View 1 (tube, helix red, strand yellow):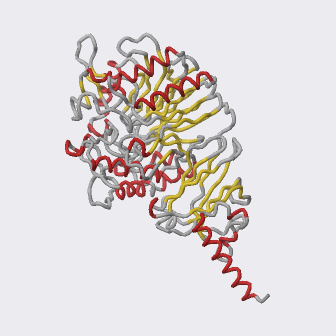
View 2 (view 1 turned 30 degrees about the horizontal axis):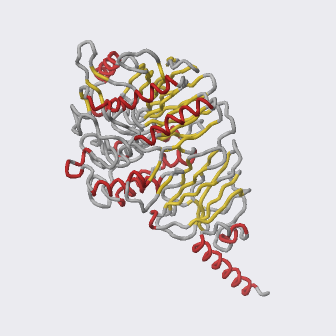
Length: 556
């Protein structure tokens, strides 16, 4: 056969395979045709170096992995509007010399060109590398390690609140270099506003929404927010380096939200049809951009039925991670939807006993997960918890002058908090640990069955500060001495709290072993320095909780 005829046959074969890939999804196709059938003759090779060129133009949001288990992972990427077939590869080798999985995916405009693939039937405790390909172009390479069958140590970071406009991601630069197994993200991955005067005045990085508004109200705006945030190379580096377990908080939809209610939108928009559509759009964008293995129905018009993101992950008998959704099913705030005196710095209001954060179905699920982990002999019950479950008040019961710091936290939903804590006490569930975000503050606290009449500790809580979002130090613009005096007064009023620092930005790391957990609070020297490589990470505080004690010890 002459060379021209052979080349023509090869060309027709490639076109036929690509046609099948576009029309069938090609799940079965790669059983018969190796990936070289897609790439051969298109300017790329399949040798150990792959002959590939990394293209941020084609893959502007890089890659991500998430919801890792002993045998599965969810892989994610997005193309820049390209609907050509994309090959996903998983290998045990950094240079992809042995491909253990490959498939063809087709980006769609309906999904904003995002791609997700759940890989299953992987062996536990193995390191893998993955990438997405088109012709001779490759995404950056990501990596993940499946969970060991019964690990004796897990080390993870927990983070939240990464307002893009408020600073540079120095925390992510340092986090990407940590020796950890995975990242737990506790929400506020994006902020629905781009220049809110109350907390986004820094405006170190500016951009526009497609609608021209300052607040996201439609799907294109929410998608644009994720695209901008995920374009940051330091956030990308963390996603490339570690799998994530992600839950949302309020700003993925609207500040201090409950169901489809947005308090800051005004009475005309409070639970209106416009707000319901906005909630649906916000949830859809989150689903599209997160490497999460969750239920989602794009045609459902009830926000509470459209998506379900609460879920759990098992790590042998060492720990269980239980992630709760504390926005989609919660009640409105108990004392009103105003700011000071209603949501913040509010006196006790009787409706706190009637409110819910989790909703009946999720509460029942959560309690069953706590109990089953106890019965299964799991040592550490780690609660991926969006808002602080520790009590935080100003004033004392002896004077009768008590104000809650923030009723958007569990303080505003005390009846349900007591149900959970009483359940833990009655079932003798040990080693409950809440890891929390939202407050933009480093907090360590011990949890009691009743904060006003404490009889028994039921667990502990550690709260990580924000990556960049404004904290008390930046919001109040106070000198360090004045801010410290406020923090010390808060500790005086709340004996359950062992540490409270709202000066800094950074992240937390939790080291879990059978006998103890150790939590490190890491701060960064600056979020205002655009050359984040010039910043430093500094260990702010280190704590230990010994098994079965519910007692926080400061060890560094």
